[in-house]
Image (cartoon, rainbow, N blue to C red; front, side):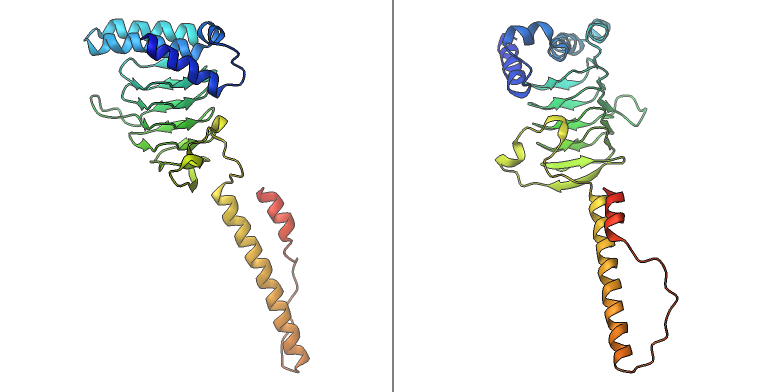
Length: 245
């Protein structure tokens, strides 16, 4: 237990620049308190002391604002940062070195008791504030889920998911660069894939308009019959791109 506690404190200091020392983390971090009390509750749950486990879970919720079902599996060095409003369901699995921010739900979408209903987060997953991960699927190692994303399908390892419903921004190679910590699941230079697609379409249409105009002018200069079409508003690609941004 004390070995796990040392690991937890050390990992929090590494991932939170506001953490000044181990004593401050031990006494003032509700995410750490919630994880410690969950270990007690989970041990009772596995021993068949279901009510005791639920009561410890309830006390942890009152004290920390974090609700973790005693049946959930929480790995080592899991950091629940700020934590208020976090809900982790009964069959959820949170792997080692995961980071979960405030307002996150690891929830289920079915009501069938005794089945796997909640998500599995593999090692090193980061879930941004307000994200909802709903369903019995797996979020791969070192994946990142952006703040307020709603994830309802598997996320590949090393990928970043954003939006509602969530879209995959990119899938990085499983290298050291994929394992770098990203606060709140924000990936540098990341962008919504829908925004990228819209910008690409806008630029493509603008290039087509220019090409059609050049072809029309060439035909007229050559003396070919080219009926003049009713002119409409020209496409302002810069303005449209600003709206997409």
